[in-house]
Length: 122
Image 1 (tube, rainbow, N blue to C red):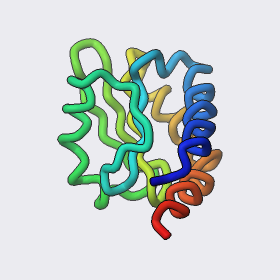
Image 2 (cartoon, helix red, strand yellow; image 1 turned 45 degrees about the vertical axis):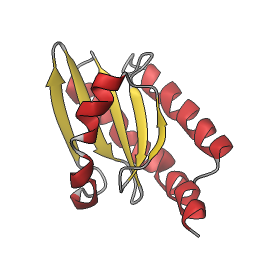
Image 3 (cartoon, helix red, strand yellow; image 1 turned 60 degrees about the vertical axis):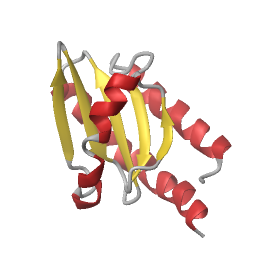
Image 4 (spheres, rainbow, N blue to C red; image 1 turned 180 degrees about the vertical axis):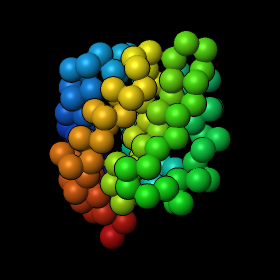
């Protein structure tokens, strides 16, 4: 498994980036490996269940590609943010704004995320 301290630090930084727009609130973020392994999640069980429906498609996603699912008045946005990681955000903010913010995370954290996940694969 990836180093917990490094994952926790990255998740904290990602949350801070997303909070700038109010894009993420409590119980609205999951970070997974490209094969669906959970690195971090604070999502409610029913939202996690919806997210898990998309895990088989993760390997086919390219970096930057995304899937958006409307759930009631909120959206579950799933984006491949690096070669080895997928970020899911459950938000009530406008999808386009959140996608734009998530896209900036690719450049900001992508290599670091791959490095942390890569250390666990050796």
